[in-house]
Image (cartoon, rainbow, N blue to C red; front, side, top):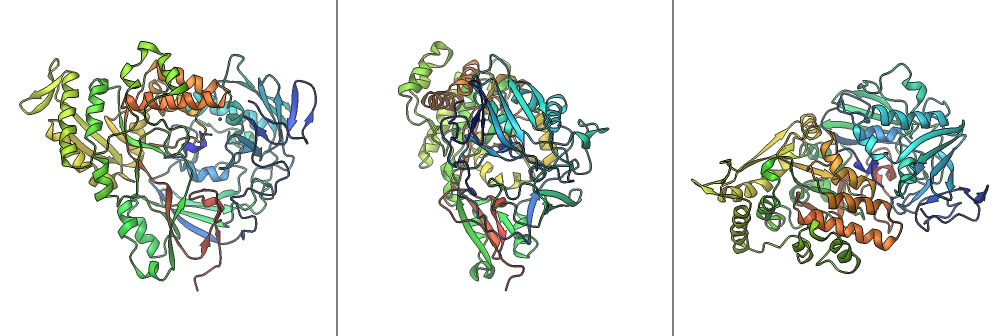
Amino acid sequence: MFKLRFLICLIIGIISPLNVSYSNSISIENQYNIYDNYKYKFGFKNFEFANPNAPKKGSVKRPAYGKFDNFNPFILKGAAPSTIVARTFDSLGYIPIDDQSTIYPLIAEKFERSEDNNFIGFYINPKAKFSNGEKITAEDVVFSFNILIEKGTPFFKSYYADILKVEKITPSHVRFYFKPKSKNKELPILASQISIMSKKFWEGKDFAKPIKTPILGSGAYTIKEFEQNRFIILERNKNYWAKDLPSQKGMNNFDKIRFDYYNDTTVTLQALFSGNLDVREEMIAKQWARGYQNNLIKDKKIIKVNIPHNNPANIQGFYFNTRLDKFKDRNVRKAISSIFNFDWANKHLFYNQYKRLNSFYSNTQFAATGLPKGKELEILKSYGNKIDENILSTPMGYKKIKNYLDERENLRNAVKLLNKAGWDFVNGKMTNLKTGEKLSLTVTGNTANGNTFVRVLLPFINNLKKIGIDAKFRTVEVNIFKNNLDNFDFEMAIIGLPQSKLPATEQKEFWGSEAGKRKAGYNFAGIDNPVIDDLIEKIISTKNKENYKSYIKALDRVLFYNHYIILHWYGESDRIAYWDKYDYPKTNIKTGFAPSLWWEKWETIL
């Protein structure tokens, strides 16, 4: 999945003593914080998690999965290598992993704040250039925003809905104006993260159509060479204009990055051992536990390491398509959810390497726990009969399944829930007593990861069959899978979405009713719940930190209680294996696997 991280980030800011006020209503700031403080004071040399002395040299070979036939990741048509292309673009500001509410300079060298918060202005660094040497101007910024709204995926029009317009003030000064009634406090963040494209490059080209050659960008890398569906080679732009900015020091250290394409993650392990890959992230617990027992590991020619991260856990799970009649009833979804035995899978298949996702905000301060209390309880009670009163007395999270007796009890309870929803056994098949429909489901995965789920799904499918549900699993090509998701053409699907460190606007895309009706939206489950819509609006608009946290916890609880997704699991570290000619910063900041921070120690293994 492309880094929905590119979507995700969250107006009250401290003005640096070095900032210059032009009037009582407008100020110019060297860095922009949407709450009340920032970690790095103006004049900082580099971020703590980066090594400013990392050598700039060498190359690295990494795996990529699926296929590509288009270099425009901003449109629906075609399959674009989105995360790779992202390395060739810069945005107006940079948001570091350890200070998610602050915008630091990148293309914009200064930021303009209005007292009434009805716009944000950006002053473009006069050194800012595209990779062909042409200057970045306000016109390029205006073009980038407008073209995304007009011809990009429907996501952009929704995501930036509260931005009224973008206006060129001077050739190096641009403003994003916000809609008068908008209460979205993260609009400055959203504006700062737009990938800036060249207006001149797109003249005479149709942005809405796939493009077979790389797009002109301004990032640290350019696409030097590629062969469709086989490989892409990025080359570091040695004239990269931003290489000495504090926000870029210690990053983008390889001269070349080669991505070789594979259809299956399991094949890439042997590619690592044979030297065809240099660095690889392990996605399969069994392989991490048992697949690295050879002399390369023993002799430490290949290093195997868990790199801790503080990232919110991805929202990974079996997504119900609630647009289908059979999945509209919460009792049906809860019944099916209760049959998935994560505890057995974690012990027998995952070597106890994972934790269960018991929240939509796991591994963050926003995860709801236990029973609601305090402000969270007050918020939920305010919805009266719009929510099921049992949500107030239902503890958060899945019940542990300790043994076969617990599993058997879950099966019995699942049948009761199905009976409550109007289903019962007819000739051994779970049947809708009104329509005569037999309850069946197909779980769909893609070829990049689907094969790894077979062992997980077989016990789940067998248990479903015990209560008369005909369940199947199928895998499809990555591109077909994407098309299925874009058109909501699935019953249940294995999907993962990145969660934000500061949840806000992207939640509307994940769970909002409008996104669920729009093709190519990210509300894959088709959630249509007015309480959820209202909670999201309050999350976006509130400026009080404690209320903000309470609204997210309330949303978490409503999402979880309704069983729209059978949540999977997560790890607290990234599992990385790499040849011992590479290194990365060892700091107290939990970066996880951050390839832009790595470097090559020497040219060949001794």
